[in-house]
Image 1 (tube, one colour):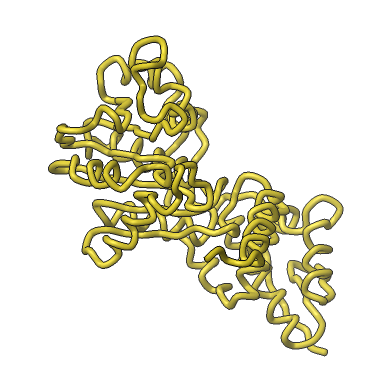
Image 2 (cartoon, helix red, strand yellow):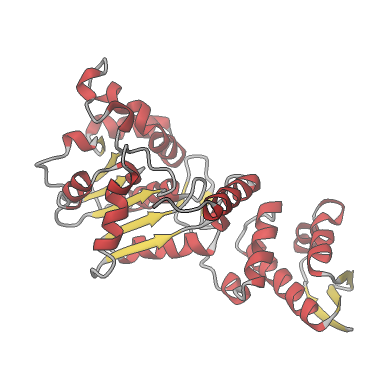
Length: 322
């Protein structure tokens, strides 16, 4: 039995750390198997040496999270505990505090997980970034945030959004209305993210000026996209030809972000996914980053992590088809 002390001078950090009715601390005690008390600006952790070390890293990680201006939620608490158990406790403290951008409502947007931090680093460093991961990991939202940041800093002149319309077989001409009406249902998630970043009024103004463009894959052939931030969403539903076409469209001073979830391929032949092929073909090409997010990077609702994990276990347990 040993005891470890963590000093915390700011009362508001103690209140946030302990949570309502000390819920957070009780969760740490239960999961780490330690006893935690607070006396005279000191948090005292007692128990077996290994357990105390683990709980100390969890508390330090949560304090670092509070220092970055992020609230502690059930989801973030369990995320920190899981990372500490994987031996990545020190990485939590070193996570970047950089704000990606400020939303239309004045909320600073930052990466919330190590996976998201690596994603943002790849977007800054590379001309082309592939991001593969399950729903809820922020693949699209963070890409749009980085595009808005680059646009506001006058690093690019346009934000181009594209997404395969699998349900219509890319034959958008059969749908009623003009081009905008045809692709709107498929690009709704991208619009929602832009509304959050810019506000509906600014978004509409930039759309009218052509600074924000909807460019479905079926209409991108033959174009050269200069000074643009290009985002291809739901890329798992592109064919090999569509993916190659997109990757040969960008010109000078352009960024390309390609996001997708390879577990949700809607093509008739999942093996024909352009995204699956592209990450194999381009994995060793310089200036191309490939980031893989997991269920641990899910930031929507903690239950989604459990859903993703349950599906992964189910598919892994099934006998592989010959």
